[in-house]
Image 1 (cartoon, rainbow, N blue to C red):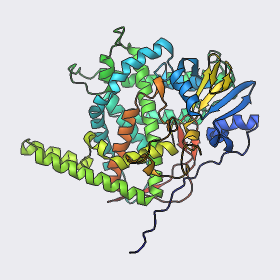
Image 2 (image 1 turned 30 degrees about the vertical axis):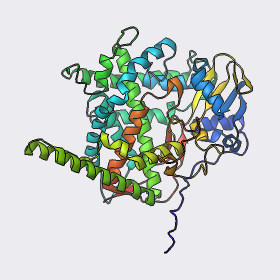
Image 3 (image 1 turned 135 degrees about the horizontal axis):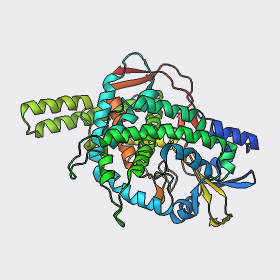
Image 4 (image 1 turned 45 degrees about the vertical axis):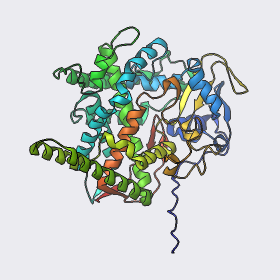
Length: 483
């Protein structure tokens, strides 16, 4: 029997870590241009890394017990850093990401039911319908900017699933504002890092002017949604209906208009930006690993066909209604929310993509009071970093950490080490939309690859850059061919 050569192993190109700690100005420059380069080679080998910056201690934490202490056992002692607050508040207001104390607890317990697993079929229906529309419009056998395509796809999914609105009227302005913010105001300045959040800087004044324009656009979206006819209470259309109906289980309080606006801003921005970059990195990886792409495509097509056949056999609808259903099935490739648990290879690719390219590449906290992590004292005011970018590539937790290997997340593989895979965080402040994000990315990726073979038009490296999320340094041209 002929020997079958194993598929070539893909090692994505990423910025090389410095061999020794950066100088003061080198560190400040890296934070502004690409924060992935602030961690040394040693950071990927050791449980902790200390450094001093402007008289303050900064601690990178990789030890599982210490991560558990910061994020699970004692999260009340670790608040968001001043730079995080300055950068995020202009675009999400006082949403769940920035809320603290009682305000955070009220938001969390009020929002959580709207994103519970039982709501996934409703939300996944929006994903399938939106993805089918966007896939119909993608150019075939011609250069295509897939980064822009998945950004608009994820934004439209966010609009439909959250507020039942087509984003054509709002999407271009929203993407233009996001690009404007990302180019300059989202990049931390030295004063952002060293001054308390309550002390405004000249950049904060510019961020406030930007925030006024951004929030006016969000209010337009809320107004458009509120102008739609009401829905019966037992038939929510989207997350907005669920949030309007939500009541704090302890106090009975509902969200007021400003709170609803801030929730919409948070969900649309965080919900679409992180999913878009995840889809982009997944498509880039699969374009460079055609053997893996073929496996995902075969899985998606097989499961979609089986689902379509099963629905056709079991349908008791009239001929006209069945024909409409079959047309919708054809556009969606037969995939729907019920197919997600069976898309095990596709989901493994998404999870491995989140390992190699976590959108939330670093969690930065400030110690409110002294604490002890493992056998180390952590003084009050210490900046504590937990960096999924480092954890997901750490030599102590992963075999061949630089290699793209979805087998790590297949059902028969051992689970990742404790606190070694944290794309959504952990503990009480774990991302409330994690389940929806995984469902959305898995379905959208499966639908695209069931329909198209994805290739690149150049082989030049595309490097990740850590600013607020993990964005590519350039948008390469792709080519789509029908399967």
